[in-house]
Length: 90
Image (cartoon, rainbow, N blue to C red; front, side):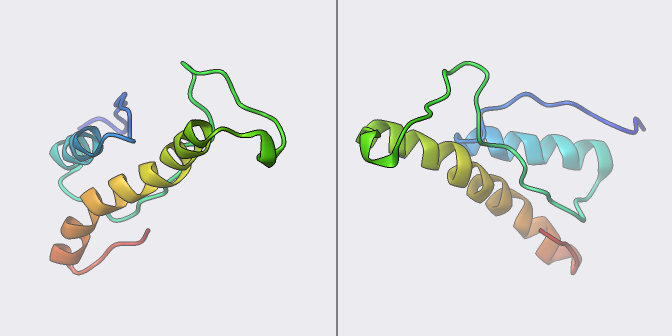
């Protein structure tokens, strides 16, 4: 078994978040700890840095997708396994 794996995914997409969790489970058999550290920036998009009042609705929604939806999707995907094994930390 390898000590590490790398998986590229758009975690705003719940199917891709599920695929990441499934890849980890396939490699290691369980997930004991989840650290939601994705977000903030996307290497394929320009960073939006300006006053909140100047944000468009679309920019606001994208920021929420990158920073909150990613954590929700991965947590929702990992949680059933943690519950089933009786242990896990997020």
